[in-house]
Length: 293
Length: 179
Image 1 (cartoon, rainbow over the protein chains, first blue to last red):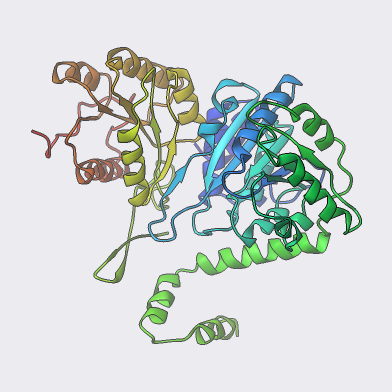
Image 2 (cartoon, rainbow over the protein chains, first blue to last red):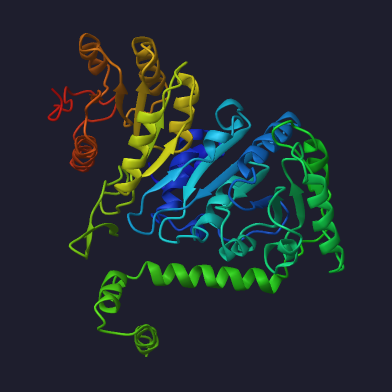
């Protein structure tokens, strides 16, 4: 199946063709930009969901999927899990927590490994999300790996960012640290059924209020289903994105830069030379610039 | 494109892995769904297999417990999987495995390679293999043998030899490690 055939069939609602089209984009066999998936208006239809491992991102997304589907929306999910930097393999386990993935016709879930961008965002994610929107999905949710500063990179792809937090995640100083909290358009404190969730939500609110334009902080329980409809309605009424346009371009640039480096034909040889002490990192970087002469 | 595969004697070994059906010259990790059909709560084996395939450089999607054949086929379709591993220890394999195979063929997912494992009595195996399931691994199977199966499949697909559930041919994996 070539890309044009897959694209045409996917637009008529054929799931298998859509799945193949995503594979073609993901593997780099086709350039998403050529099919028109490269650039788009930031219309709020791509939602990034991020937060530390174990806070309940996948379970919360499952609740949101049921809510959106019941309202007649078609929603696609790109659920990212890390690839091993050693073997390249990956265990993709987000789908297992999303019942909607296999039960609801309005929902399409695709598990995505970070491939050669360990810890980061797969470089073709934007084109994959664009393809899903083009093929009739009203909304795309991108669920991130959930670790590290690289999570900030989600703003390269997502129009809005939902940060999921949970109670017992440390004292209030954790909420003061720089990072994602500054870019989140909305914060959901999950596991409201556990002790301390309400207090933790208050601490986050208090911290955010100091910085002026504060995003909404909601209390939800993916386990019990409380606060979900409120979260959906608040998601529908978000103001302008908090991430500055410049920050988005910065993350896109970094993402492409890293991909260009990691897909070089000689990357293994470069690593060999570094490992054997044959060259230093600054020397290697220097050769990149000399190569452009 | 090549993928970093393993380290031997401290040296990085780079080798081509499973070649995808679409472009023989582009290699990406195989995408493999490991599924637990039916009412069966025993998933230690499925998790060990999933982990071994991950460590061999593949992308593994684990379905979790108690999935219906319909849910499993939906997962295979949406994830564009190359292989599907079915694990059953409940004794219901003679209903569940054929049902999955039928649904895969109905969905035109003919090129998906299906293999099985768990507690599958010898007497039940010929009929399951006759449905297009290419291998059945029982207790005592080594991880090396299962990986050898996956590697051989990659080669068969690259060579265009029938290996999917709906592609016909009578090739099945010949067990080497089992007694």
